[in-house]
Image (cartoon, rainbow, N blue to C red; front, side, top):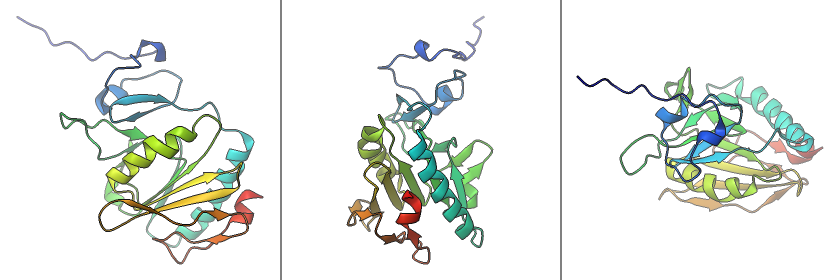
Length: 201
């Protein structure tokens, strides 16, 4: 009589195969200290604790968004917060879990005790030394594929924001870069005006 093999709990990041392919079910069994994201089955180790410029920008944006969306039905969530994107592997398994710096979710049915199950409406990622490749390439692709309606990449060092909006064929269109001298509106929330001088101060 055969016995079922119990799933293995992983307590050390070093136990993972850097070339391996993992699913959300695997991710739930990881109990090591390092923060990771799972993008199309590949494991990406997140940067160490954010630096002060990252923290200041994150806190400023979070305060602005929380104040604004308090009057709306949308929820503002900040990292660490798991977002399971509807980007599956070739076998149809859930294989993408990310932790955006800030995200806005207007469909409450996507929220559960584990985080967000589905694409947020708006995602903001704040660059830190060492994580720019992730935001500029890997996450750009999965956010677009998942249907995140608007995606901002905020650069505290360059004091600018790249703004991408999903078009009618499901591809991102990039708007003109905004600098600290600008006031910026999310395309999908035009009643919100963000003074970038305040964000980068």
